[in-house]
Image (cartoon, rainbow, N blue to C red; front, side):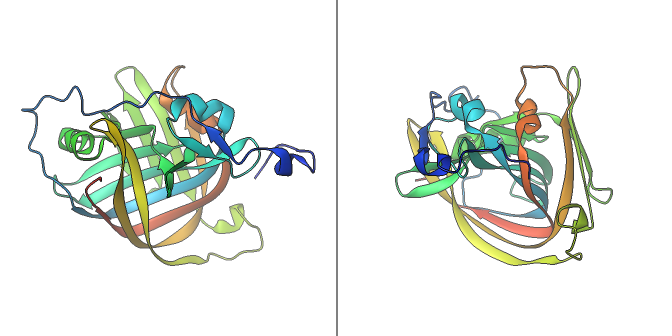
Length: 250
């Protein structure tokens, strides 16, 4: 990972927490009450996922985040980019792309704050907005899981393309193709809905493989996918099968 040079004392002097400056927005405010059936949580889902954990510049994401940002390196915060195909959900199969470019704090909860969530299912969009306050928007997601390639398009053309490769030697040259041990963890999903910040339980289970990413934004500024151009890659993991249970926000 190519991190900027810092003075040896910078990590001591730099504040760990930086306040986000965004005004919280509730994605559910403008929903048509008659659009698509609401299926309340908990949701049990299953599918495949390809994730990249990366550092994002705090100065670049600060005006996108309405909570305190945790610096994981001076001037940087840890985030996640995710390409997900859901085989099973309460609203049927669909594809999803996520940018969560900051590790944030609210009370005693630490989580990644989602700024971009593109789906190709209107039912997923409506339920994500109404159930959790997730910023879901509709798009065209051309996912080829067997070929390990992904493309997101909009009304004006292609917006983002990505692919990943094995073996993991592209990441660490002396490692063989090692599987990631099965993961099982609960992480609060922090969102803003119905006038306040809320946390929902997210229980994840899956076994993955380390991967090496290639990712680039194709659209013209301003558009949310340009954030991937500023990231400093840390680690990629692909899950051939995972389960995710999302609880109700409280």
